[in-house]
Image (tube, rainbow, N blue to C red; front, side, top):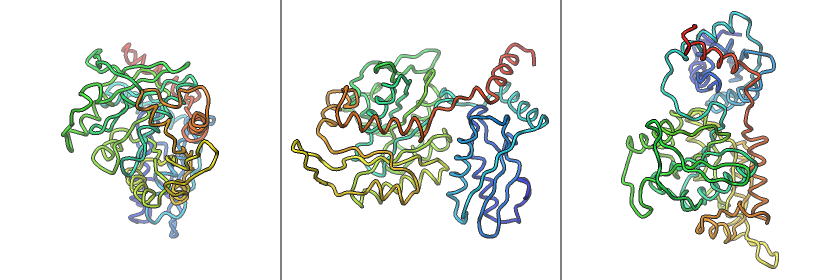
Length: 392
């Protein structure tokens, strides 16, 4: 097995594998696993089978599964890769010392970063085109998660077409604390929503005529210059399509995972596939598919496939990711958005159950919150305190 620093037989695929591995971020230390010395060996055979050896700080590190999945995702999308095998080992004392030395450097001279907690899972809700109900899915999923006692951030990154404030029935001025914006909050059961949108900064009927770098800078400010506080999840309502904001997000928050929203028709499925392709080209993990506007069930119990059927399942099979849920077409979804009371807030009902099931899948299997206490995070915290006290 070749070392990572070798030329891997001089192949272009080997170079691509090295680049992809640098997109796998250790959420504790905020640096990629190559820079941290966690990738101890890489092998690429003639058939495109890739084997990556990753050394963890401790044998029982709860980040093992996440790191393995991220490696498989980032490397597996490369053209020419037929399979990815990830093996894990444990760092020896010298390797751990090297990682901590790197962490000390980060603690002394921190690079600019967002105020999103390292432990929070960041999920972008994306679509290939507008009109598929992506924002409705975002707010109802956020509500269903908050009802479980979680703290969920909602970032409305659809700068032009912001709709989150109306869908959640929230309005008010964004306040600043220590030169950073403070999201507006709404209690949901035992949990909390923290929401930030251009809709809090501009009038609802005002057109935002920004492009390119200005758009990216707006999203960057929403990520960097915000007191998000302790979050379990941050849901980002993306603008439709494959534009500047999508590319900027992959650079600014490389640990983002993506849920694609589509509707049943084949045409919608094909457009949604482009959003998934862009995410993967940005080395973001596509976590699953939600099909919106599925069969309509009338009051007599008869089901009508008004927009066709099977688009979500076909797209999930094409991408090799799970179909997280199918949300039926029902007027209560749009009615709840018009009144600022998302349907997921109701105590019971078929649609409540649908969003509860989607939330359960996200929380338990798609993107569970990782408890990092078993890894090096406690040591890192102690080290940072020592640095701030001038003891190191």
